[in-house]
Length: 362
Ligand SMILES: [Zn+2]
Image (tube, rainbow, N blue to C red; front, top):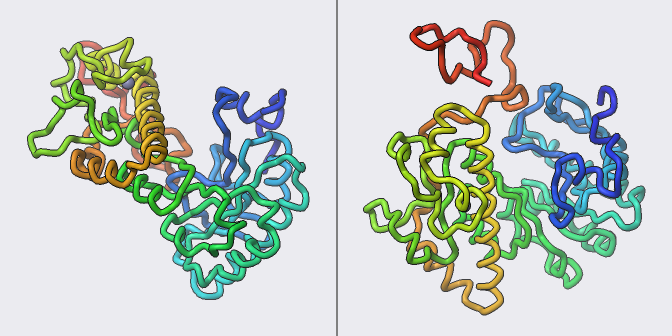
């Protein structure tokens, strides 16, 4: 990379927590991935991957990645994986993926601090194509790793079922599009999740409204007339502009306790960043409660029946996006060269004028 990223200069026992202002009680995770993934022109090499960063495409070598893990102390580090995003890999490329990932993982385990927790990546290719790599982990490395990170959760049933492997936690790096897909992954044996749709929903101006296994009586009035409940509410329509109820009646999050729908709708229309901040606080709370209820349900042995109930009560996918997202930043898209249309239209113009060329709204 060019220069030293600012996070490397953060002090304290957990620079990653300090840099991201994440409370120390919440576990942090470091993985060389972004969602959605961007295909890189140069591809990966035997010692490095190509990544898209806030300052453009960069090469990230395994050596540097290991030194970053050593410096910023994530609670969980996911070893570098050779996953090409530009084209579907051919037979030769697939063989390389397993070989390189195996070597990079071995290097990390060799050089890491003793207390550093490492999850081994499971590649998004057929089990047979990476069986050599996975068997190597099962035979030689299982005592040194603390879990598996799946790029594709469908491979979960194919993992070798030795006792030492089965007891390790499994983390999903997949992109479930709905809570129903999360439930399916849990029933397959997934333990820990990254959930990109929280951010997608927030960007789209959608307030999530689901509970597991079903709504409380106070929430039941959100039916859309089809017999099933929506998983969220699109907060863009002007019909919310005079609404003084919270995003979700039974929600105890800061947003629902402090503000009403009309305010959030106003902030979105004015493209005020606070609108998306309030939505994100709420959406995180909804997912956090969702997982709390799932843990409870598994504990008391009603998980299967509760999943059926959830599928009966709620729609299968999140509502369609209708409004615009927040201001698009440089790292959200790939520049196609000079003369591109503006990515961020001004939210308002001069009073009494049609002139929209007033610069950025904020
Ligand atoms: Zn809320």
